[in-house]
Structures are given as C-alpha cells and as structure tokens.
Length: 519
Image 1 (cartoon, rainbow, N blue to C red):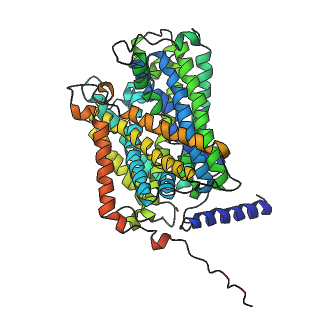
Image 2: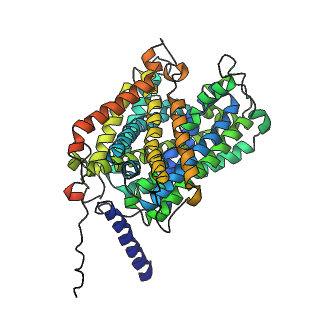
C-alpha cells in the first residue's frame, strides 16, 4: 500500500470515527474489514444453501412445486425493508444496527424493545441453524449418526443437539478470538458457498427434464380443504422463503469494524439480498425441473438433499452436500457475530444487566468476548430442549423469525413517521431513495406487518405438527412473543430504563472548541 493510500485510509477512518462520536460513542473496535468481508457477513447470515436445503421440503409439502412463487414475493417485500436499511446504514453505520436505528428513529423505549426482540431471536436462530447439521451430515455418511441408528424416537433430535453443540462451541471460540479471524473463515466459507451454489445451478440445469411451466403451476392439488383454497396453502408454504431471506442488516452491524462503512454497508446489504434471491431462486427452480419424479414423496420429506443425490448421483451429490455443511458453518458464525454486536451495543448504553461486563472490549482481540460466551451458552441451553421436546423447539424456532420481522418493524415504522413529519434526512452524499423514500417505506411497513401476521397465524401444521393437539402450541406465536415482549419491556420499564445511558468508559470524549474571537 502506498503512502497516499495509507493517508487516505487514515483520513477516512477519522471520518468514520467522528460519525460514531455523533452518536455518543468512542471508537473501540478495530477497523479491519473490507468490502467483501461485509458482503460475506450479510450473505452468510441469509445463507442460500443453508436455507434452501433446510426448508425446501416444507415449501413443497404445503404448497407443491408452485410454492416457488413465494421466493420472489418474499424478496420484493424484504427489498423494501433493505432499501430503508440502506439509507440508515449510510447515516448510522454502527454496531447493533437494528437496536441503534430503532433507538434513533423511535426513541429509547422503541430502541430497547427492537433490540431485545432481535437479541432474543438471534440466540434461538443460532440454535436452529446449528440443527441443520443433522439434516445434511447423516445423509453424507451414516457415521455422523452418533446417537443410535436414527430409527429411535429421539435419535435424530439427540444427534442434532450433539452436532449442533460442537458447531456452536467452534463458533463461540472463533468469534471470541476477534473479528478478523471470524471474517477470514467466513469469507472463505462464503466463497466456497457461492462457487458451490453456481456449480449446483449448472449441474441441475444439465439434468433438466421438464419446463418451468409444468413446475410453476403444479400445486399437488393442495388447498382443496382450506377456506382460502390454494392461496391458504401458498401462504403456509411461503414461510419456507420467509424463514430464509433476513439477516442482511448484519453487513451494517459490523460497521464499527469496517472501512468506509457509510458507503460500503448499503452496497453490501443490497448485494447480499439480491445475490441470495437470484442464486437461491435458480437452485430451487432447476431442482424442481431436474428431479426425475416431480411427484416423489421424498421431495416433501428428505427435501433438496434428496433431489441432489437422486439427480446428480452419490459422488457429485455428496460433494455439494459437503459445501452445504460449509455454508451452515459460516451461517452460524455470522449469526453469532451479529448477536455479539447487538448485545455489545445495548450493554454499552447500560441497557442490559451487567452492562459494563458485557460491553468490555478485549484489549488483545479488540472484540467483546463476554457476549460471545453468553450467546453461545444460551444457544446450547436452547439446543438441549430439543432432545425430548422437538415439537416445542420447532414452535420456538418459528417464533424467533417472527421476532426478527417485528424488530425490523421497530425500525421501519418509526422511520415512516419521521418521513411523514419531514424529520428524516439521509446523509448527504450517501445512499438515498430520494422521492421514492416514502412509498418504499410504506411498503416496507405493510409487508413487515402482513408477513409477521402470516408467520404467527395459529396453523396446526406449523405449531402443532405432531402428537396431541394443544391450544397453547397452536397459539404459541402470540403467547411466546407476547411474553418475551411484555416481560422484557416490563423489566426495562421498571428497572433498566432508570440506569440507561452511555457508560463512561465507552462515551465519546468531548473536544474543546476554540473560543470565539473577541472584538
């Protein structure tokens, strides 16, 4: 790097730190991440291969091959949210982005609620993603079924906990040793994932046996017994897409550790979401066009893993499944990294118990180590619940996604109010929606509210899929989200809000301004 480049980089770093100072914080995290690192963080959280391989079976089971249309539907809705986030990332590229944006747009109470919902959901999501090892590794080799032979009632669930626990321990150690190590592993994994995803598209395209018109109109006759007909079945199946396309805000949550984040974060958010939509959509479409038997029962049970092995053969298929394992690994890394920044951001404002401990930055690794351990431990505890209560765990997992959508609403809804009052102004020279800001923001709020309701709807197939029917499971979304939101906010209102404020050790140092000249 030339001396001019170093000077430019140093000057930009000072500008970034000054922007952080406007929010009341002093720079403490090390700025080491470049363009690809932030893009990789966003796309690995979404994780094309993890999401499509984990949820393909669900979409086909409840919507047939035509469920594919939910992929572009969810993309358009989430794009509205992402565009709003891009304006915020251009102005406030800060750790724990959703929390800080909600606080800035809606005030401290809305900010705390948005951060609390996002943090709780992140820890559950971490456990849920780690469970994806079980869906893939035993299909590669039966050796990975360490608990029983897979035929027992709880063999799969117990083995999933074992595999997931190993993955979470690995992720916790990597994240504790600093963002640079995490970013290197994550970027390498994302590179492998992208190459594998493109390769999978090419291989599946070479085995196409039917046209898109056949696939995109085949509903398996589902919805005949529903009040809304196939539309009702489609809304249920759309959860398979809604469960995948979120987490793009991670690209901005690493803003305090990135170079020129006010320019790079908005680009990374959009690139991650658009790349995920295009690549994931093609994988799903070509898989449905290439599978030998479109009516095979395994499509709704074994999922995309079955399609790959059946279509490409065991050798090539297993190579791609190993790439899925890599994708799951870096997805867990990204989810935990985002959770760490969120917990650090809330603790820095003394908005969590033991805030000074949680917000402490390691002088050696320049990263908050305690949040990494806390999030890892909580995720492990949640995993253990899955051993004998897999149905309850699936309810909690579904609810985690709802809480993330609601946390996003805690940003977009107050932002819309600021626009209507004429109080919102994007950063000059940074990402701006211009005259499209208001309609995009309105669509983002309407989409977020509608999808949250769709996710929470008391469907037996989602919240009480097996075993005896229980009303508290069917209404689990409303009960659990209500308990988390009201219980958490009650604690904040009666206890924590009286202590809130940037901790002294994290507060920006005020610089003395020169005295005005006297006459």
